[in-house]
Length: 179
Image 1 (cartoon, helix red, strand yellow):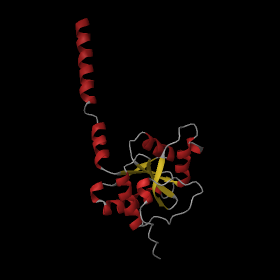
Image 2 (cartoon, rainbow, N blue to C red; image 1 turned 60 degrees about the vertical axis):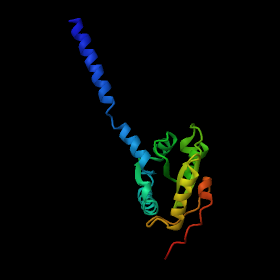
Image 3 (cartoon, rainbow, N blue to C red; image 1 turned 90 degrees about the vertical axis):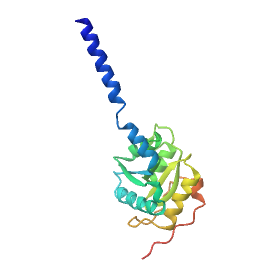
C-alpha cells in the first residue's frame, strides 16, 4: 500500500515536471525577442489607437522589427511590464510616464523607473528604459519623426517631460501635420 502511494506521488511529480517544460512561457520569450512589442495603457482614452498607429509606422519603416501592439489594463500594469523587462517599449500618458520616472503619484512608494522618451505622440510618450540600445532607439525615433503616425493626435506639451533617450535625441524634428 505504501509503495503504491509512493509510486503514485513519483508519477504525479514526474508528470508535473514534464508539463512545466511545455508551458507557453518559452514561446512567449522567443516571441518577445523576435518582435518589437509596444505596450499601451488601455485605460487611457485613445492610447490603443495611437499605439496601433505607431506600430504601423515602425512596421513600414523597419519591417524586420516585427512591430506589434500589446495592451495593458492600466498605466501601473504598463509600467510593471517595462520594469520587469517583459516588454521594452511603452506608450503612456506624459504625466504617467513622468510619475513613473520620479516615483510619485500613482507610482509613489515604488523606486523611480529610469524611463527615456523616443517620441511624443499626442498626449502620450513612447518610452523605454534608459539602457535601451541607442541604435535601435535612433531607428525608431527617426521613423516616427519622418512620418507622423496617421490618426495619432497632434503632440501636446506636458509640464512633466521625460528626458529623451540619447539615441532619439539626434533624430530630426517631426514633420508638421498636413491639414
